[in-house]
Amino acid sequence: MPAQNSTTEVSTQDQHVRTIFAILEGEQEADLLLRNLHILDVHSENVYPGTLLVHNERIIALSPDESIVRYRESFDGEGLYAIPGLIDAHLHFESQLAHPAAFGEAIVPSGTTTVFGETLDFASAAGAEAVEAARALFAEHHKLPYRLYAFAPGKKSAPEITEAMLAMDPVIGLGELAHLSYMTGDADDFRKSALGRANAGFVNCHWGVTSLSDMLLNYMPAIGVDNNHDVWNEADIEKSIRYGLNTQIKFGVGSPEVIRTMLRAIVKRRWPAENFQLCADNISVDRVLRQGHIDWVISLAVEMGMPPIQAIKMGTLYAARSFHKDRDLGSLSPGRFADIVLTDSLSKINPRYVFKGGKLVAKDRRLLEPVGIDYSVLAKRPRPGLDDLRPEQLDLTPLELSADGTRAKVLLFDVYGRGHLKFAQEVWVPVRDGAVVPELDGVRLNRISVVQRYADGARHTVNGLFKGVSIDRGAVATFWPAPSAYFVVVGSDSTEMCANLRELDRLVGGCVVTEDGEVRAVLPLDFYGVMADMDLAELVEATRSIDDALAKLGHHNEGEPVVNKLLTLFISLDRFGFMK
Figure 1 (tube, rainbow, N blue to C red):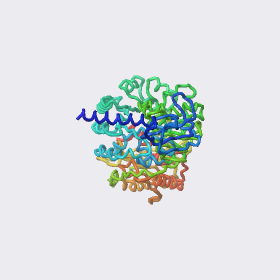
Figure 2 (cartoon, rainbow, N blue to C red; figure 1 turned 30 degrees about the horizontal axis):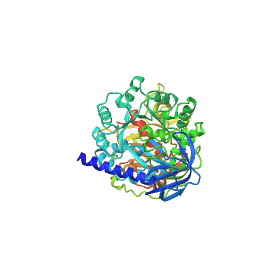
Figure 3 (tube, rainbow, N blue to C red; figure 1 turned 90 degrees about the horizontal axis):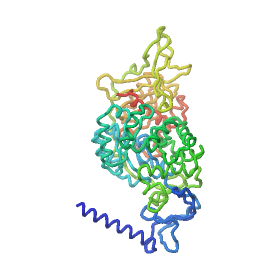
Figure 4 (cartoon, rainbow, N blue to C red; figure 1 turned 60 degrees about the vertical axis):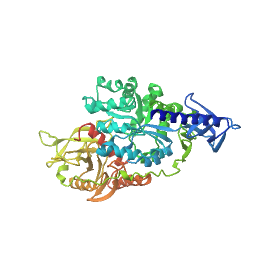
């Protein structure tokens, strides 16, 4: 059988090379000629006028002699700049709540033609069904208007699931390893690392630069980890590149200042751009529609002083090279996929036309055709777990009382606490008439409760104060199943918060806003509690309905939709030990 496969492959490749030769000799037709372009050559960092000849999804010639070559179609590039399709080097598929097709509706019109995606929370949420669920998620990935390269879970799932997913298409390596468990010598982490190395794939990491000793930081690069996105500031970046890691600059998490802090450091220190790739990490589709994706961060980098071509290379060639995909992606050279963005500026990317494999897929920030992939097989039935939840379990009780009984120590959680501020702090607040007052430095705060969904014995709850959502009345709650099934509810009254949680408990997962026990807005996440069974328009409408309902309750939101902000809490709640 191996000999037969080898013979078949050689025959296929023989036909391919003869076809290319025949096209360049004018004996056969190419698929497409894109003319009237100003082409960015990322290798020489020059722009030149020219044409691109495309056949079988790939560029096969630069500025061919049009008196010789023949082609089925031509496209007038209107004198626009042609740059390589943009690449998101690290994205958590679950974080934007959209399934891959709906996500494509948002990112492709922004010029993104390739995504390197993590699946760890999806796999963890699916539990024993993870392998089959992943197969269903990936089954028709070739129909997507962007290229998808995925990673098997490096954490939150059993090694057996990791091993099975490493054998799947389009999985190319091991997803981010967990610094909090490998630092203890966790056997499962060792096994997953071994599987990633034996598979000869790539290994991503959440390096732990903000929490581990310099000694332990040696471990991941020493075992061959390729990429790191766990950087937040200048010192983190310097350490990451010194340890030889491809350093992914993320813009989808933390406060809006995080990405500016990192770009400012790169420009100030004049670090070579080849060290860096651009990634969202976690981002909402609503933010992509309002602000952009990789196109936006390239433009921001230029605005902050980076030369435009260097900024573009971080979102194209350097991202492709970090995964050894630069023979397929990242430049407009013969042999590469014809993933092309036509823009009227190199300093402020404005995708007028977007091509994937030579096919026009988006024009003027609109996807031209619906994707048409049905993911409904992933929808699950709700499994409630809060039947015995009581309002008093959500009461704010002190960790400690002052000697005179006028102050109480409580937990304070900050939605923007990851990376640049402390996520959870112990603070002193007033006590009046024997009750804890949710007020810090004269500012009234909402309360937050972290509630275990499925209790085996006493239900685990953590109650505190919260910065990030401020409502005068009502409550809002979200749920996340991975690695443990927990709710987060924000409000000011335990009875209202409990009623809200009971409404959300009727769903597989999602977000619910209530007032006086009545549902004001709901976003269901039917795919294992992490993805919505909706197209882009439906998902955006649902997320905005949450924000609109909260606005009526007194909240003024900025940046990401509230549901996405709240869901990022689960990352830190898990990391800092607030979930069992």
